[in-house]
Image (cartoon, rainbow, N blue to C red):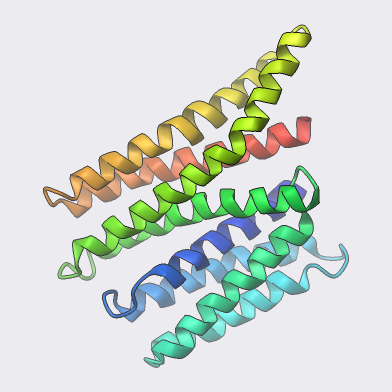
Length: 242
């Protein structure tokens, strides 16, 4: 259950961050409204999973309420208020992630969770933005290209943070008889899918936009989302096992 709560807070924070970084002048308000509902759903499920477990449930609960209000503001054309709602959602869910400390525990685990959540949330955000070109075909392609670049930046930071842990895991395996098959499978999913495969897919999607072909780029981003989510969950399971 802890893994589920951490994942929901992290992905909600990452998606809210993506909304904050998306230029409201270049993207229709409907995109912000629809994606705030996704953030609200993630926060609501986190509240249900945290029921009866201390007071931290109040943070995702507040985020869900703010996301609902934000959706109304975007529907009413209140751009400034909608952006403020996106910022508040990001702050509340980021605070919940840090205070929970992540699956690995501690503030360090929480900060690592923020970066990992940003990678997953921004990748998912880019995919949904690419899908929105079906509703708004006249939307500028450079908006999606910029979101992919931001997701790649977040991935680079995550790699820098994950490298010391990866080296430590290799040293521990060398000193012992080595990890079991389940642990090896999780390591493969984490490093091959989440860390090595994700940037390849993001770059492929970005290059596809040069054609330009937003539908094909979005299709690649679907696969990138699977790689990011799988890698993140594998990292959490490895932290639990560690």
